View 1 (tube, protein in one colour):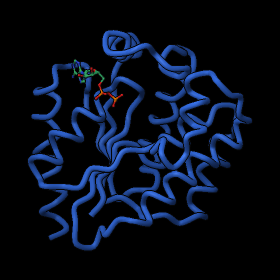
View 2 (view 1 turned 90 degrees about the vertical axis):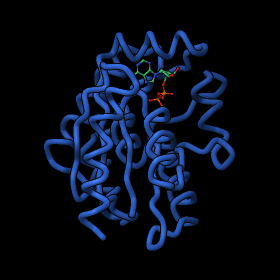
View 3 (view 1 turned 180 degrees about the horizontal axis):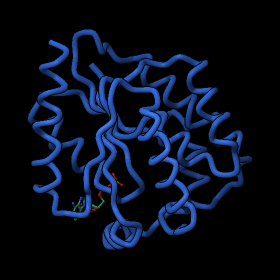
View 4 (view 1 turned 135 degrees about the vertical axis):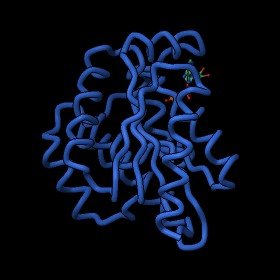
Length: 191
Ligand code: ADP
């Protein structure tokens, strides 16, 4: 089974993926994997320029590599970002085209997506307290746009059996307390 956790930078994906993976004895995978695609990190740190379409394809290639190694028949896999981030962050690309490409590539379809929705200010403050923000993390306009694309994908129930929107503006435990029973139900439903 595959569960994806999504949201803008600083929404709390890694934090919630860790809690869920611990409770449900799941395998946690995080995208992008900079070991597979070091150019993505170089881009985010402002060291190289990449054409938006190249960047989109690199994010996607990284996911194709990572996801091909997992056994989701016998394991619960929790993905910290998946193709939804690839679409949402594909700035200056037509997002309908991006969604079309994703559907045509036919990667595994998650059983559920948990979209942790937070205010931009909240997310930026959290990241800034933690580390020097990268190119995306300090780009308010991009984060606004990304959040609106998540909303579109949520409303379309794009590329997943079901989407859940979680209010991520609360503290870590409150967010997890909302997510945990939903996750339990998803797991029970497919057993
Ligand atoms: P993401 O993976 O979405 O970028 P992280 O889980 O890495 O977000 O969290 C970014 C920072 O915010 C971390 O320092 C983390 O401890 C903190 N954080 C995560 N969730 C919350 C929350 N609900 N309230 C306050 N801080 C949080």
